[in-house]
Length: 168
Picture 1: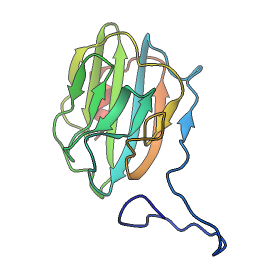
Picture 2: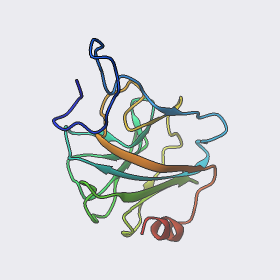
Picture 3: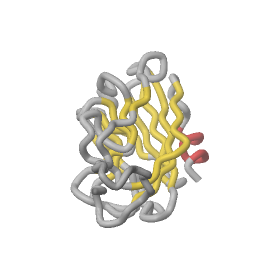
């Protein structure tokens, strides 16, 4: 069976085998790829809809989220465990690929979605611990239910003007 009302991909298995989708957690190694001191993440994604209160696009541990979506299909959010940033509303990501970029460091974190204005707030100094989960949190919950591509990380904080430019 597949989680959700619509099958999103074909799985070729013998007719006697059970199929379970969303059973694995895709992760990106954190060592050498992400730093609490400073960094930037970029991702392109789409979803079939908004289900539940929170859907993770990228996450580190079960609490740090960069970015995630919550209720609104026209923005992403960024949470460092203390303060949440809500990106300026833009085009819907429902069945339409959108871009989101987030940066952190020097006491500030910023987010831009679909080329909208950058929103910044205080950064608590940590993006969590462990590997970076793609499309869910590290325990495999809060699934996005869509497509994710072009995941990029920089170990430096890119300027806000670049965040806006790369998400257009």
